[in-house]
Length: 311
Image: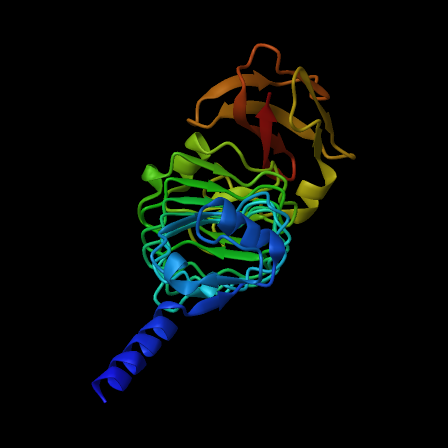
């Protein structure tokens, strides 16, 4: 009887210790073999070999199926950059702090449980919605080249960098009560983004230059205070054009019959750096340094500001 009991104990112990995880993607399993976590390409890996892995790098491996990832129960850092992965399922106990999934056809991600997330990149993915409200420790966010429409970062008070260029953003809220800690943002080539909500529009205008000329910083809905003067006369705005923007040497102005009385060029600090009282068709920018300026145009129908980038 003792022999039978011992045999059963050893058998169950073997079964437990030999528990395997299904890994159907050969490229994924081969990467695990390369990392010393598996030894035979047979679609299975010992679960015990992967359950304690804290960091996993499988980038540039032509992987299309990440099945098996759900058994990496100790994972904190994961990089699957440049694969063909369309979906990811993590172990329920995993709380990532470093997560790179850029250049994959991933369409959906749930990051709400990953409250320790420090750096996240989903650049050039298919993600259309993203909820970062629970990721209050997030420092670095890279989401350029995504079809995401809205980006709410109001709960992310530890942000240091945000790169979101070449995207489809239409609404961005950066009012996290700590904008002065954000060293760099990039929202260039977002043609459908009229405003970025910020803590202090004057600070943002002076320090964050990587936005489109058609995008302005505001603090509250309906505000135009990041421009020295709000535009009240839509027809006036439509009838006066300034180009090219950005400008490198000369800025040209067309008025379509509107009588211009004077023009001033104002820098982001509010200082007037140039003023014209005649010959309003062309303005010389050659002597001005690179940066953001406002063209203040006074007409017989009202006043108008145009935001210009000198490069």
